Structure formats: structure tokens, C-alpha cells
Image 1 (tube, rainbow, N blue to C red):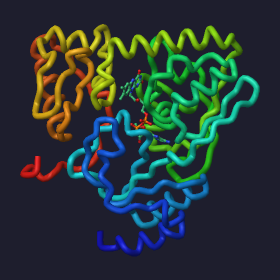
Image 2: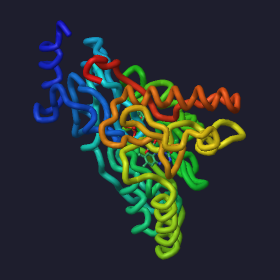
Image 3: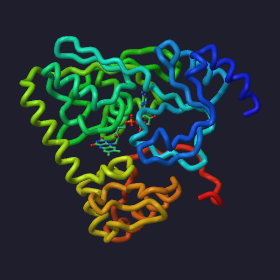
Image 4: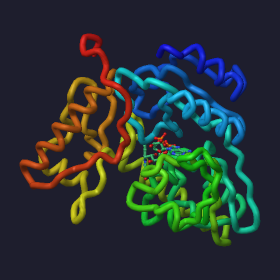
Amino acid sequence: MGHYKEYLLKLKNATKEENIQLNVEMKKHTSFRVGGPVDVLVTPESYEEVINIIKVCKGENIPYYIIGNGSNLLIKDGGLRGIAIKLSKLNKVTVDGAKIIAQSGASIGSVSIVAREAKLSGLEFACGIPGSVGGAIAMNAGAYDGEMSYITESALIIDENGELKTLSKEQLKLGYRTSAIIVNKYIVLEVTFSLRNWEYENIKKKMDELMQRRREKQPLEYPSAGSTFKRPVGYFAGKLIEDSGLKGTNVGGAEVSDKHSGFIINKGNATAKDILDLIELVQNTVMKKYNVELHPEIRIIGEDGNTEQN
Ligand SMILES: Cc1cc2nc3c(=O)[nH]c(=O)nc-3n(C[C@H](O)[C@H](O)[C@H](O)COP(=O)(O)OP(=O)(O)OC[C@H]3O[C@@H](n4cnc5c(N)ncnc54)[C@H](O)[C@@H]3O)c2cc1C
């Protein structure tokens, strides 16, 4: 952190001063409501500012993290050293015939509403996913037989060399909860979706039904990051966890949800360490009982906290 002051000066040339915040508690920016402080949080307002910020980070050798809505992120209790870049101010959504062009900071739920209002079908599956467009494409988010890869045409990204590029769906390599974006640390600026015309009433009915299913099945009343684990081939993570007798098991404030065993929830005062310890407990138990390895779907970043305060 020796050159902290110097890089802050450079950041102030890269974006407006009011877009730079210091020592920000990341628990305010994650749906789990856990996570220690980041040194610097920047919220750029234009693509040019994002490019400038990346140039500063690369030039000064400062680690950086792209944060969407934080709905699939577990940030450890020690927080993040370096810069978190949150693109929530880049949230414009444009309809062009049967296409929608959405900036990556828009919420995928709000884009699905824009699609419904424009009588465009394809995004109904995403109406209850609490991520941003950038996070949804990076993770190839999916639900109820839909996923981002089915409707994505292309994305405007910043590549590993800091250059702007438009990548086709094929180049984005959208796989099960992964993509070339995650693998190569691309930054997504906007996504073009290709949708099809349908009746407003049909789209609305489908969305209402899916929202209802979510409310019935998922513990939406508690902070979480959705499904904690990826689906192992040939199994359902939630069922394996439930059949292992882990429903309701807790470590500190972290608990395997009673309502949906695939969700770990924060019952109020969980630390990231509680959640990580519970993840390990679940993995070990399921491995012992069923010889199946569970891999977290959530992205885990940051430094361990001071154990005394946890
Ligand atoms: C209640 C609940 C229900 C959920 N239901 C579902 C579901 O049905 N299906 C599903 O797939 N997921 C679900 N999720 C998980 C989560 O909402 C999705 O994974 C979502 O796509 C994450 O988006 P985000 O903007 O919150 O990303 P974040 O959690 O902020 O980030 C996730 C990853 O994406 C990267 N990223 C974010 N934005 C960008 C960008 N602009 N450019 C490059 N990389 C970026 C981050 O660096 C990180 O690696 C659920 C979560 C919750 C809390």
C-alpha cells in the first residue's frame, strides 16, 4: 500500500472524485450481507472511465475486482486489497426491434421487465435472478430451463490487454455457471440479447408463475447467494444435502436453509468464515455419505479476517 496516495491521484484523473470511496464495507454490496472492507470502491459512469481505471490498475499493479450486484459473491471477512469496480451506474437498456442492448450494471430482472413491456420473450426465466447483466452473463445464469446462452447474441467487453472488443456468443464460451469472461477476467460493458415476439399476457403469466415458484421454494426472506453449490452430474446438490441430514445445520450465523437445502443463508450475524466452515462441513458430509464432490457455485474472494473479531 506504499503507493496508495499516488494511485488515488491517478484514479481521480480516471473518474470523478465522487465515484471513488475509500474503505468501504463490502457487506453492503453482497446479497449474503458479509464481507470485510475494500481499500477503494469505484463506480464509473462511462465506458471510457472504466478503461481509464483499468489502465491505472494495470499500470500501478493494483489488484482489481469487478462487482455486479454481489448476489453470487462471498467476500471474506478481511475484505479486498486493491480496487473493487462496481458498474451499477452503467445501467441503460435500449430496445431495438427484437433485440435488447443492456449495459452491464442494469439488473437482469429490470431487463426482463423491459422485454415484457416490449412484448419480447426469452428473458422470463431471469425475472427473479437478483444479479446484474454483467454478472448474469459472466456466470451464464440460468433457471427453469432457460439460461443466458440461449438469448445472448454478443457482448462488448474489455479484454485482458485493456482493449475494447465485441465477442460473439460462441467466443463468450458460456458453459454451466462459467464463461470466457470468468476464465480470462474480461470486463463486460454491455450485452445484446436476441429475443422473439410474443403476447404480453403470455410473457406476464410465465413470469408470475416463475416468481411464485421461487417464493414457495426459496428462502428469499434471508440473505444468501442463491444455490451455494453447482449441480453435480447425475444429482441435485439440495437433495444430497438434505438426504445427508444437514437441513437446518448451522455454524455460527450461517445455516443450511430449512426451506431449500441447496441454499446457505445468513440468519443475521454470520461471518464469511461461518459460511466457509459450513460449506466445508457440507462438502465433507456429502462426500462421506455419497462419495460425491460438491463444488461451490458462488465466487469466493478476499482475505481471511482477524479470527479474534470473528
Ligand atoms: C435469492 C437468489 C436467487 C438466485 N437465483 C439464481 C438462479 O435462479 N440462477 C442463477 O444462475 N443464479 C441465481 N442466483 C445467483 C446470482 O444471482 C447469479 O449468479 C447472478 O448472475 C450474479 O450476478 P451479480 O451481478 O450479482 O454478480 P456478482 O455476484 O457481483 O459477481 C459474480 C461474478 O461475476 C463477475 N462479474 C460481475 N459483473 C461483471 C462484469 N460486468 N464483467 C465481468 N465480470 C463480472 C464477478 O467478478 C464475479 O466473478 C441467485 C442468487 C440469489 C441471492
